[in-house]
Length: 631
Figure 1 (cartoon, rainbow, N blue to C red):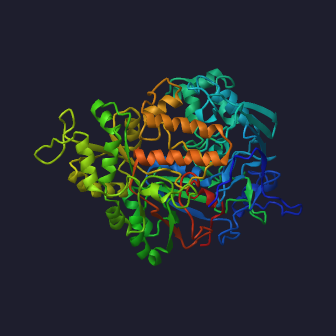
Figure 2: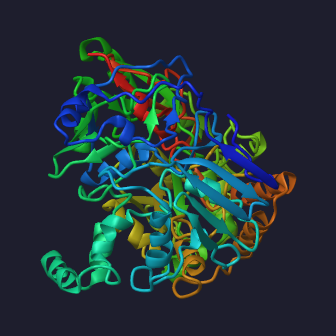
Figure 3: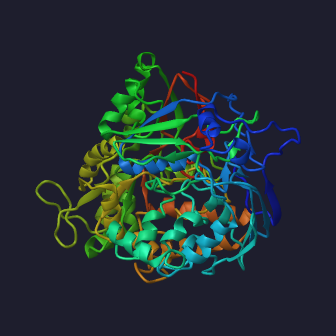
């Protein structure tokens, strides 16, 4: 795989060439009646003048048939937002080769990594038929990002360079320019994320709820009906580009959610979607999606029974054998895609916990290294993954040019003698009658690992870690919390340690943003309060005071300041090395295979692929709009 470098000094990205004699857009059969009775304009008036043509005819995929309903299973109502991830309509996005290409944009001009001129497609429309224009960018920038009531923290941090916001210029109806005083090599990668920053909004829809534009009396009535405190709270509730929980909000994604609610959610094709196949048929091929929310523990069984046409959420490698055995009866096939996480499961010592005794222990490198040395990763690999995974750190994988075999195993080899020696050297020599070491304040050395309870793999791994830690005199207690509660406890410093998946981008290139390796966001569970301090500009959290963490911040700033690929490689390498040596996160195994269940009727799902969040958006890079059903 190769990522498109965004470090060139002056360049442009253009979309696929459209031939002069390109076929005229074709209406999907499902929309013919609406066009005939005037409920919808013809397709020539719905798609842009220069639609995105084809682009998915690789990996053996073909032009398909339009129609049908795709069935999916999800474990939580909130997971409905994944349809916006998998739809993966982005201003620019990664293709299957992890190169950045225009999508919603027709083209993009970049100068010195400082100036980005965005060219929209003429005639592009929102899902309700309203024009998608530069006004939607202006509205976001002036009326949301720079409105103190809607965005009290100020311009989103991801749009700042050296603390400075961009200059946003609306050139004309289809042209917008973002400029920074210094290079912003992160910008394109941000736009291509699974969860994009959404630097545009449907202004025609949201203005109704904005005090600057809407009728004050109507807004007051809506605030009362919604039982919120202010117009800003009302506006933020209606502004749900990512959450996908407001059926009234227009979208640019291939599928539009319908009114209603769980446990069955329904989505229909976006009649104004901007992509067509090479013969002119408007995409997506599939007419509708039906999502059923079921108990997480039932997803494997219901998938095996043939109740899903496309399933990855809620199933794991442990389900692969049973699913493979059910292929014939369930009328599906099981594909195995490598997961691109730096570690399938990782432990995150919370260095910013508010418990002073635990804080001192967790900030001691020897303690973190002892915890890592007391994990038998080979046993985890053999027991849970038939020896097919790679034991080691939470770090860059073999598919990355930044991979290092030595780094993968550094401080990550099972060595109980070393673990005990490190703990003894720290002075943790006193034990209770059961053999558990005692902390300096006399408490048992029992680590409460907080989990979301969503992953059977996490639970199984913790069970395997428990006896080897116990042999080193360390107790392990698992405590489940709902996902949001888990994160909030970590952010507030209440947790001691959490378990989560490893680096989202385990296949980084030097041009990738190294924000998972430095304390720059609270989402990294090893140092949430240090990250808060950065993102809130010192208003909350605490400043990083560990020398190695400060070094990571310095390196992160240096990465953002350079456009030299060799220098970026050096910075990435040093950051990866520091994280491995310090064991800021404790990895287990990587390269685990993710089962992808696709019904026999579902076409254009690649037989071979990779499964990752960023980059990739899971199914997103494989163009779910090009999947089609042959019932």
